[in-house]
Length: 304
Image (tube, rainbow, N blue to C red; front, top):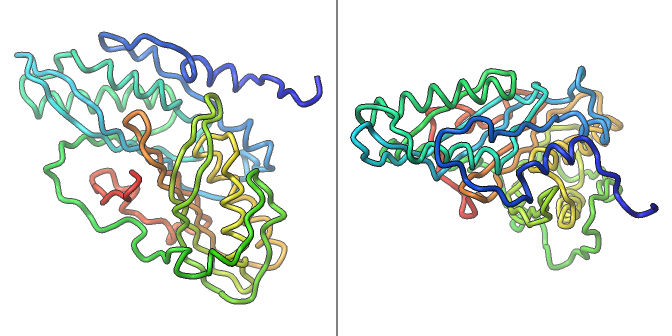
């Protein structure tokens, strides 16, 4: 029927846990994990799996993790989980939350250190098996040193343009909003007003987007701002939104430049005790590597 979205194979996979009423496991339960193929959304936007226009990582921070020592004392942990973007799958976030919570009553070691080490090894094994790629997992408890603000060298969009003088009318992704400008050769700007919606539940997801472009003919900053605002009614996972923004900018820049450097990243607000921070670059030097070093605890943005 016209106007009704056909359910895809990916929709069925994503909806196994997300948007469903699911009882939280009372003991260790790796079977609750759900993986989602990346390719369906990428095909929609002309991103070829065997010729990706970017490299990068998906960085997940989980803040609500606990297990027990063998004598029953609770161990509180946070986790930083990192995996590459050239694998075939992402982990569905609600299933990851339920999986991590399934450790809450598990006795994982004689003391804090052994419990943490044992849980780290098990989570790494389970996620590597699920996603069929190497996974970096690091657990910590808040006593470790915090590195500098992530992306602290990025300018805020409100300091670069007069927002009050711009008409915002598009709230669904519209690539026609993006225009080539002549004001900057190097753009390094953050957009704290990013909002999209969960692909299954349509609940809002909030985040800060970061865009860095070095090009002879660059994209107009006002047009990038209007374009990112246009995601306000889009229903996509965080990783998909970042890849869509990247691909639209990549295509436009490719039309006007023989070469350029592009970084699109986002730090989303935590939901269900987890935040997701996708990073996509065509030049590795543009990535903020404090984000992708497992042992680096980054100072959080206000909405994380």
